[in-house]
Length: 222
Length: 222
DNA sequence: AATTATTTTTAGACAAGTCTAAAAATTTAT
DNA sequence: ATAAATTTTTAGACTTGTCTAAAAATAATT
Ligand SMILES: [Mn+2]
Ligand SMILES: [Mn+2]
Ligand SMILES: [Mn+2]
Ligand SMILES: [Mn+2]
Image 1: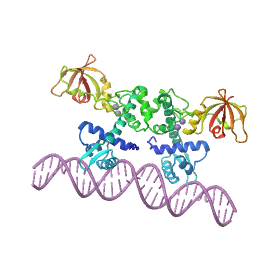
Image 2: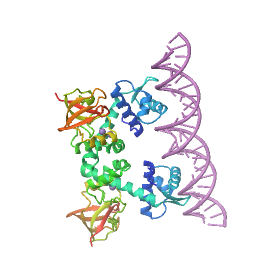
Image 3: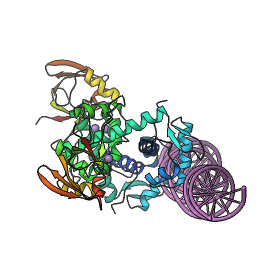
Image 4: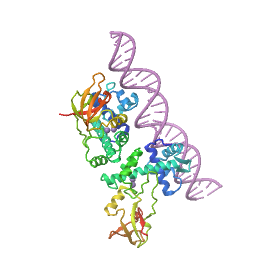
């Protein structure tokens, strides 16, 4: 049961996992193909293989979901990805928009001692540089009670805790606008025409489009 | 010229490099196969591919050597391997006999920023945990003036600076015998019958077989 | 120099992962 | 309920890296 998977297989499991958590239902071949930038026919082939290994549940034409085994592996790969991202930012001087590509490679390195040693070295971080929670060695992680900023109403106050889009372009935009994780914000005004928002961030007034506000996760102050 | 190579291709280059430095002449198909635990026919195929990419010089039946390009890549992979080994030992609590397998994976991660960042984080170490020199970012590294301990004569003094065999079994033997890199030693007596040696290490008398002494690198005191 | 042994290469096959083009199933629209 | 559009699967092919078995070249013996 603890055979080694190829990097490709791990990437499929991760993709299926992350598509499942947003929709909460069996994932379609097309969606997986899109996410992995491959063709649906390739996905069908791979999914059969993963089903043979008891990593996914697969019924022809009905989509794919992870088995307990598959989920465990997916979460473990995500754990490694996020730990490496923390390491790169904290210790090697990477910006938060530079880490993803490298973490995509590092997440496939197989060594329990490495992963757990890294975790300890980093003093068991709970979130990665993008605000995503890091699973612990048993695969458990915090389920955050978050909403997108665009859902807030006028006057409401909250704290920025994550990004939905973690593309380099978006992260650089945030850097430029001096919008950082952890910042306390207040919605001063919400324009009903285009849903743009005027925010107060660290005493500064900042206007952002819905494109932006719908990609920022916030935690509402209680 | 800066296309990405597969892990397999990188491993072939590294193997050819290390076989070349010991013999200093074109490397045979059989030797490469043995080193990589593969078949000579597979080596022939791969060597042709590497020759097409101008990474090796290859003449049928005459063996293989690295081109300047090939050597540059091989040295860069070795650089990464050894830097990671230092990281694992210094920061993640690995023993020197545990690092190799993991470094074999990490050495293939492709990111200049990662490699050079790691180098800086480690404060530009010059040797890895086994005493092997670490190439700098330009591929230059110290050429050590070393000999094997077994070549020393009675009364001669020297310092242990490296291991020829870096198998886990040998390294564990050394740990057990409390023989460490950096230790100053003196040859007290050399048994001509079996070439075993009686050494003085840190004031302790230790007897070692030729098997051991021929796998320890020393630097003679001047 | 001729024979034998060893090394190296070729030929053909296979597994993993991918692709295109075509067929089958499902969903949406009429 | 049929037809049309979309999604998904299959069939066949290609690439990378590997293997076995056989042929060719080289090296070692006699
Ligand atoms: Mn990432
Ligand atoms: Mn992240
Ligand atoms: Mn090593
Ligand atoms: Mn080493």
